[in-house]
View: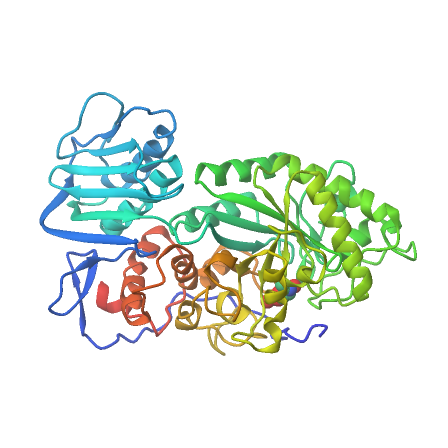
Length: 539
Ligand code: NGO
């Protein structure tokens, strides 16, 4: 299967001017923020859809130059969320919006309060009307997710970086919300092409808008090792010195990585690090000859084939190396998971593969973490609570789904990333200027219209830890490329991870999605104007 999915044509830059055909005008926009079927009540266009949202037509909230953001005690953990909200709102409204912990608040104010709401570790309640905005959650994470909803209840121009004209109205709503799944993820491959700290932060901000809480970073592959490891310095300095196509590559210093972890944590997002193994390891093998079974370091690799490299399963130094790497990385990452990769080890005999993953799992456990890996790791003696990331294109009871059932039999959890639905690097159609199509073309509707708990027979709601959209970067090398592939599909995957399974439909969703377009314009996000989405009808 070496290289079989690769598309030879050199990618062209994704353009912004893609024609959109408006769909039939059966739905209408109301108040600049909501969409509703003709003759029915308008619902604000929030993505992911809240678990419960009631519009209260008789009332609405208006932000004014006198408005304050009032944090009720206990304030310590809520204050950073209030400041984050204030920073966003101040830029576009031009209002002072002081954050205060003093006294009550009136109809112009936004109140934030940490208080039990019965909505779990990430849920919140949001009430808006002429009495003010009242956002309550049991955790700061819940408040943060509620703030993302509030952003979407305000006019799209609130996202602009410069002062805009009002009015700044929020429709009357009562929202009670909490996520369906704990893992709502996005993966970024920083190995095939390196992305700077600034570029990753930009993506983190975009993901946070849709309540994504897990950023999985694919930190090492054949083409580049992207994280400094003090005990094996050449991994980064040499193994990170190039990328697909022969560009300069790059790597994160420990300080860079800490900065990313903190930046994500401030947005209630956790970084799951992945060092792919035992395959996809040419960058490491090229950096240290002793890691190779024959003691010869191969040259650096800048192509796009897969399946040709393997760590040397029979050598003890392999495990000392892994112990050092896992030790240094897990010392930095607060997340409970460490991702071992484990995919496409075509140059590792099966028995060796099982031996290798078993030993690596011991090391992961010794460093206090749980193992995550691509679905292939289910063939090893994975411990209950380890996580298999399903990336097959098979569904139902097709042969390719067996590994997922094997994982469930071992009491592993499943993160759903079926390539023909969730892979954000798949082209939308044959004209998409970036991306691959080995798993088919994945239009916005394909990415949205499936359910994580019914995709594979024998893998049900309780087995699924969550959903993740992987973005592999063979053809992508800067932020506009990331954005063009992630938007508009990523918000749909985020909704699969967050919103209740019942009551969702593409016909309703596509209008809510269209209403995000002006927000992405305001934020300068380079998105694909899919002809499936009625962009023009919600302007
Ligand atoms: C596969 C492969 C990656 C590629 C990707 C491209 C997995 C888990 N391994 O997915 O190395 O980059 O496809 O879509």
